[in-house]
Image (cartoon, rainbow, N blue to C red):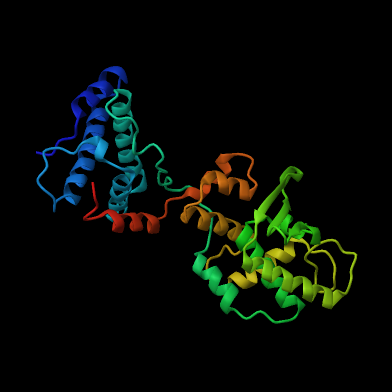
Length: 307
């Protein structure tokens, strides 16, 4: 018989100390039991088990359970409720000293249905745009490619982009100095690809306009300062080459920058600093759990995930 350790005492705790209704407590019990049934199923090729100790359960097993439910078509709100039950169960075990740490404490929950998530592109599409789409070798083409490259690689806002100056680039340290909201300066690393593109742009800029007193980095075709609508038209035009989504504005590139970093293991605090957010809540919107990442966790942990 499949057993969830300490489940009876957990239910008593919900009924007596938390004053939950009997109906709610039964729902919690069913959810925890379902989770343990899943754990037994993915261990089916191992020796028969009488119980699975909570200390042997990790974040990977919980994520793969969420993935299986999502793939099986369960509604997001239902998945959230079941996850809440399991989190409460682990909190109880930690409170009672049975576990030192809950494996679910740092788990980002799937977003509730109806919540707007940032529009973003797959990194592969942006790489295709920058490497395969033809940009004319004149000032206009090189400038456009450089602007798109910087927006994708640094996540700068439109206002920050058009206010960059020729002094914003530190080639010696490969850093971009950005003046954000409230005139707060932040430094964003530049990779070899971006520094090469910027040097190429600056050479073409000087050949086109000569030594100009214009301090701004990016100039119009006539050598004037840029304006926000220009950047919006630019991204709408070029993103249409790689996506049919309605949203093709500069914010999509900022969202793509943040999403790519988080999906590749960057810490949320590091992304917060790079984006210039004043608080973590603004950054947490990018930690959306997509069905693709859930499926990746599912493939990794099921059906022969190690307990």
